[in-house]
Length: 396
Image 1: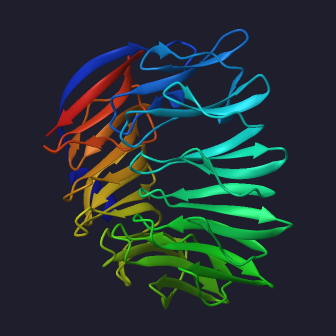
Image 2: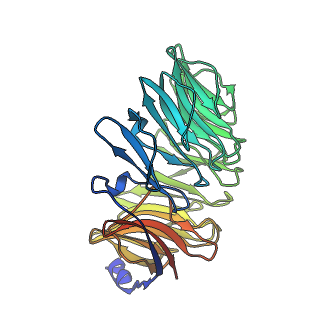
Image 3: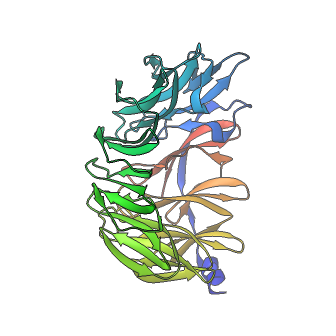
């Protein structure tokens, strides 16, 4: 009852928008198939002809190929380049802005560094797999799986030889384990963490230091300044939050761990007795039947979270109800300051909520990147409107 009352009091005002039509969307292309650059100015999709596939970038068709590996392409972080892998004449190669790599027997995956200056991919030659960073191949293994590529070019990947698994960090090989998963790098590339199992025990390895044996462990999270690392775990009946090696026990199942950018604060959701409680800095906060996500603002002073209700989902910032929708797909903090942008749906239409201000409704909002925050506080994004790809700049 209280939640319903609060939601009726929550009101939003419209964003002022500038729309620019960019292209007509082909009828055979669905919105989910459109690849969008991080700066929300460029787009691409895969076009199928009778006997070939082509990537269409900003409306221009690239050279045809037999197959586009994984059916995907990625813009670099600076949005200037587009990267994808293809098969031609039973061989595989990477393509960056039309420039082709050396041929390989197969290519399975690739990573692009956050700054967009480094590209890594896996390639198979003569039955052996290599991690290739900036066109330089690493040593051969039976199996390779890329996990992380930092802005400075530090690469982390899983390698397997003779059924033993290794974490390869910046070319350095860990001791062997029975199983390794979730290798993460700090943003500056100088720290690492991964989950390793050996002799029936599972531990978190942080900077080559083994943590205590645990029953279950979630992937490690580094703060944006790379100084702090945290993860959730269970041991027997204990539910643990482990921050910089300090373990504390809480009731309920713990999920959705998040650190503030400077690592001085943390939050997670505890589920107990069919209710979710948001814990902030180790202290229980709001409780609802279901909390789906929670995030810190860039300045670490504010928290946005999403609550499931009988009629949809509601956005809150610092316990204040902001708006109610059929569904809230994701919440993004702005890179600086305290703003949040939510992508939401209402009556099968999509829109952006910027703090307490709504954009108009669109047929779809495109891409897997966040709206691009401009220096003046506006946001830019691409959407579908009446069969066209439209670039929108929205301001308060």
